[in-house]
Amino acid sequence: MADDGIRAQLETLYWWGVPTFFRAPHDEDPANCDIGVLGIPHSAGNGSTERDQHLGPRAVRGVSSHNRRPHAAFGIHAFEDVRVSDLGDVPLPEAMDNEACIDRIAACARAAADADTRLVSIGGDHAITGGVLLGLAGPGSRVTRDQPVALIHFDAHVDSYAQLPHWLGAKRSAAHWAAYLVESGCIDPSRSTQIGMRGAPRTTTWLKTSYDLGYAVRTMAECRAMGLQAMIDEAVARAGDGPVYITFDLDSLDPSIAPAVSNLEVGEGGFTIDEANLMLRSLRGLDVVGADVVCLMPTKDLPNDQTAMVAGHIAAEQVALIADRLLASRG
Ligand SMILES: [Mn+2]
Image (cartoon, rainbow, N blue to C red; front, top):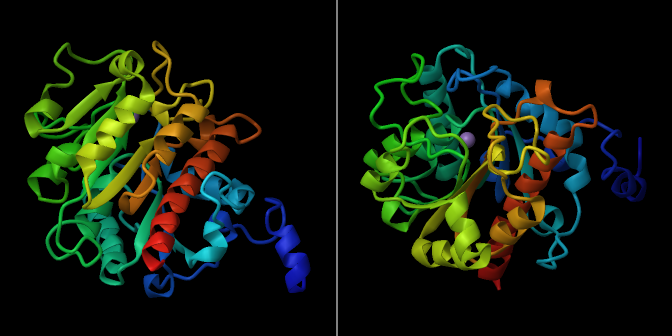
């Protein structure tokens, strides 16, 4: 097999070797890494459209070796400077039962929190964020020191449907997580911002539940009016010094960049990839304890796996943010 020199040369080529996230070592023990990349092949939390989001982790593993590179803007190489593992996939033997899956996801996230390990999760539909934060944040969490997180939420949708008892039968669904995580003490809405909401809302009061819960909301129209840098600087100031969680729904991007998402919003432009980079890199220095990328629909992707590659890029930016903060805290 390849010696170390040849291996280093080959491992950024996506077609070589056994695919893992970012070609990180596959090691399911979160105690053996600083940042664990977790696959969450979950589709039972969003029945709005097709239900192939459980294929997301496998699609990202297939292409994310591309992203095993230095982060030029931060001047670090996250995959060499800190320990990054592919933790494998959350076992979901009740894959058709959303509530059972959320409990399984929460248990895996709690194991990471107990090891003081930070998580970057690859979904899966947006219900996964609920399971992850039930385990990673709030009372009893070692990694957040029992605190709720500030949520930085990039999405076309608010996902805070507290007014609905269930979404097509799923209770802790892709439409509910941003509401029940506030009630359960895992998210502090007074430090949180939802960014990029746009498109064709179901009601004219589409933002009310988020306002009632205490979130700051910056719609796409507001982002455009105030300018992205001013908007994200405001979100950073609001998040403050405590633990932060970033969730990135790929539908916040323009459909021309990320066509393979579950809930396409085509009636109003989304963020460009450069804008996503600007916003994410502006979070540098925050105490990011976890992040996720959700709503990839590999069965709708272009033949060149463009959306999966974009998902890998966003997740690599999240890994770099966490690694940069860890390195800074070590001096
Ligand atoms: Mn969405």
